[in-house]
Structure formats: C-alpha cells, structure tokens
Image (cartoon, rainbow over all chains, first blue to last red; front, side, top):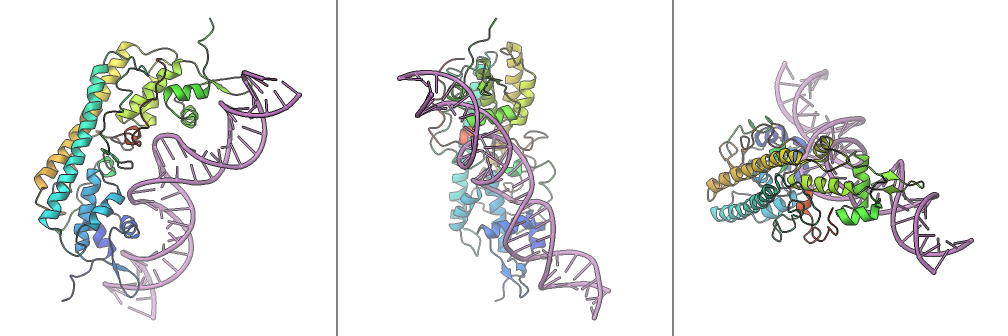
Length: 165
Length: 165
DNA sequence: ATTAAAGTTGAAGTCAGGTTCAGGTCAAGG
DNA sequence: CCTTGACCTGAACCTGACTTCAACTTTAAT
C-alpha cells in the first residue's frame, strides 16, 4: 500500500501558510518530519498538513514551540488524533485562554480604579503592583499571551488554505 | 532653590525595582535622564521614580518601549502629570486592554466550537483561521499581549517598592 | 542537452528588551 | 592614605522563532 502522493516543500508551504524556512526550522526542532528523494529533497506526506494545522492553532493559543512539541509527542504521528485526544487538548487550551483573559481583566479593573487618580505610587498603586494577578503557573515563562500570528501585519493571515486536509 | 536630594543608581534600582542595567538602557533609549557627578556617576532626581512607575505600568498594559517613549513625550518631564493627562492615558490603556480581552475571548469561543470536532481542516476550522479576530490596529506589530513583567518567574515581582514617591 | 525554477546546507542576521563582562574609575569610611 | 564597594563604558551575549544569504545541487520542462 503506497503512501499518499508526497508533497514538495513549496506545496506544503502554500497549503499550510508556513514559509519554507519555517518548515525547515520545524523539522530541525523535531516538530515535523519529511522523507527525502534520492537527490536529498524533502517530500512530505499529507498528514504533515494536519500536524501543521495543529501547530498553528497551538501557536494561536499561545503555546511555545517547546510546548507544541510536547503536545505533538502525545499524539499519533502517522494518523489523525482521536476525538478523545482532541477533547483533552481543547479543554487544556480553553483553560489557558481563560487564565489569560482573567489576567488582563484584572489589570483592566485595576486601571479602572486608577482613572483620574494618577498617583502611580510605588507603594500603593494597584496598577503598578500586579503581583497577584496571575495564579501559579498561569503563564509559564516564555509563553507570550497573544502569539505572533495575531500580531502579524493585517492581510497576511487569510487566504492560506487551499485544500482541505 | 536646590533640587531634591539626588539618588544614586543603586537607590533608584532598589526603589523602582528595575535593574541598574535596565536604568542605563532606558537612559540610552531616551526614556529617563540623569545628572552626572564631577566623576561621571549618575545622580537621579526623585521625579524619575514616578517616571519609572509610569514605565512599569505601561509595560504591564502591553506597550512597547517605543510607545512608552511617545507617551512620556507628551507628559511634563519635570513634574507630575495633571489629572487630565492621566485620565486621557487611562482611557487609552483601557481600550487596549479591552481589545486584547476581546481577541482572546473570540479565540476561546472558536475553540469551544471546535471541542470534540478535531477537524483542524485548513479550509474550514475556525480555530485555525483567526484572521478576523482583531480589528485594524488592534495590536500593532511588536506589542506583546501580556508584557514581560507578567511572565517573569513567580516571586520576582513583589517586594519591589520601598518608599512612596 | 539545456536551462530555469526549485531545492539544499550551514552560518549569520533580525527583533525587543534587556543582561553580562572586562577593564578601568569614583566615593566614602577608617 | 588606603581600601572596598559602587560605578563607568562599550561590546558582546541572551531568548524565541524564525528569515536571509551565499554557494551549490536537483528536478522538470523543453
């Protein structure tokens, strides 16, 4: 049973929306794999598109590549994740997002309490001392709250997907 | 009328919570200034503490140093900002925070609609295509959603302020 | 057979927001 | 006067997630 027709790096780049350089980088970092032709060029199986979609979604939620690699390691590499897999991950991601929302809301509420005050006292100003906004482990060091994707210049995000996985 | 007694870099560092290296960096970047002794050592006026408190608050809200510099440029350098100044800025910051909250809530809602689905279709998955989450200019490139302060290792944030400004 | 497009590599560059270091100077107490 | 700790500078380094570059090779179409 021959595998699905393999994809070149350009094809994967176009269909996933990642630059070829990013695909190479992800391969070096162990997030994706690729077979090679006799001439050493990469040939991807179609399943890599699903993996890349997972990577992009995880990055959108704010995971670092290290965290994404950890989550990918718990997923089957050669076939689609089960519904149970996805349900577990979704719940985890939902918690992360809710924590981030709560953190920013707390900061906003502190700001509200400061409007017109302008004290900015190093001792008393609530806006200045956000030490109890986040619970333990709410945002692990290195995880940006809003990931790079959402900060990209407008217009660079859409029109990436061409074929369903 | 002599100025308030000047502070050494170590004193400012302790009272503001910024490392001396950060204070030097901010000076190079034009966010703060310092007088010099005959021996070329920095001596800060007390007003710099308020300025640093402003910088920290702004960073907490997610502004880049460039943005902080712009806002500081509109504030009086040698005395406390007026209530009107502070009110204007507070409102601006509140808008920024609300935009960020809205962006993450939208992402979370998309995730909710995906739980148990697991499709991650490049064509259809809402989680994967967040292109309309943010309005124009909602998060300018370079502005992290949650600033570095809130990502620092737990325990490094509190106990910074010693004396009121 | 030719040739242009697409692919390969490792090394280096980018960005923000700083930190660290080496090598030297200043300030203040005893 | 002497020592010790605080301070000075410029340059180099750090993180994360990539991109860019130079130099070279492979693939596919003609």
